[in-house]
Length: 196
Image: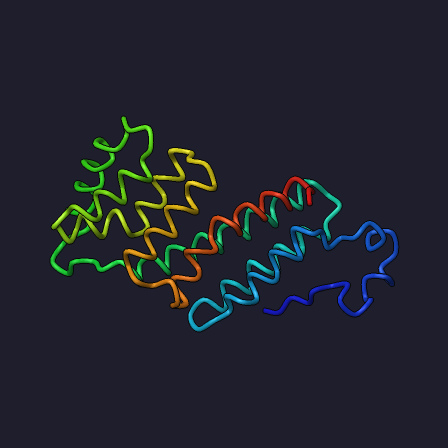
């Protein structure tokens, strides 16, 4: 699946009124540059899909259609994040799904009352000697939990940066996906609002 960054060769000028307003917003241009840099290995197809849906959203003049395109872009971005986190965090082979769910529920109860769950998750990762606890906190569950708690984008970004430092994965393809996630989410939100 390929997306052409419209406007780079003047092709949008021939599109009439839609092109005149600059269907390619500043947010989309920034988003596309980041996505193109992340098209590596196993993540290439997902990044292409995010780019195609984002481009469709940037061109759309219909709010409902734009919302749908953004929703599909987020689904693919979230799937890429889960894939990246699963490849980075070590999952104990002997732990069953049931063990994982019970432990996640126990961890959630301990984090729910805290004002800064992102800091608590990182502290728990560092201090815990239990491999399953470490996997739950550093894997997809930790990220999903922070999103459910509604932490600010900059706090999520700081969490991702510190997590990648702890995992020693900043320069890997998966690490770059994790590091880019919060910024890409912010840009998709801007596209949804039609804002630059």
